[in-house]
Length: 161
Figure 1 (cartoon, helix red, strand yellow):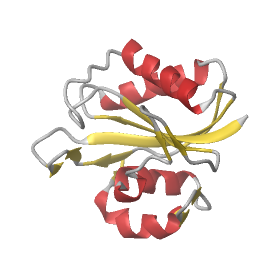
Figure 2 (cartoon, helix red, strand yellow; figure 1 turned 30 degrees about the vertical axis):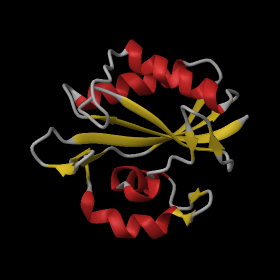
Figure 3 (spheres, helix red, strand yellow; figure 1 turned 60 degrees about the horizontal axis):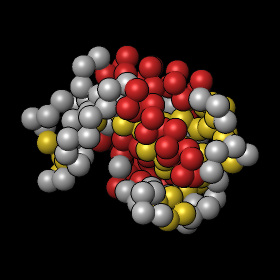
């Protein structure tokens, strides 16, 4: 069993409902136990060109799980949840009804053609760091250190919902 941290986000339709449906599906997935859920935060949409105030805002949360699934098995299970909820990948970092990312998996570093752990953009994303800190003030990012250090930098970029 390994502890992992996942990030969930939505900026289309009933954003809160998409998060609730995704969390329920994660909880029902064989080999996954949901341990903690962060508060939900709202942030501007992040696109390949940067933050875009003309796009719908995102609701995001972070969860801690315990899983018997290996990293690539976990990725496949989360992608299946996204697909079952109707996720369409039309453009990289585009609008989406649901997105689920693996942030960490235990304290390991992992790299394959489809997956990099820890998630390579964690330290640049307020919508990940702030809810993670709100969920667990003592959290550590493997290879970086305390989430609290980053949370202080990003606190003004998201708001609680």
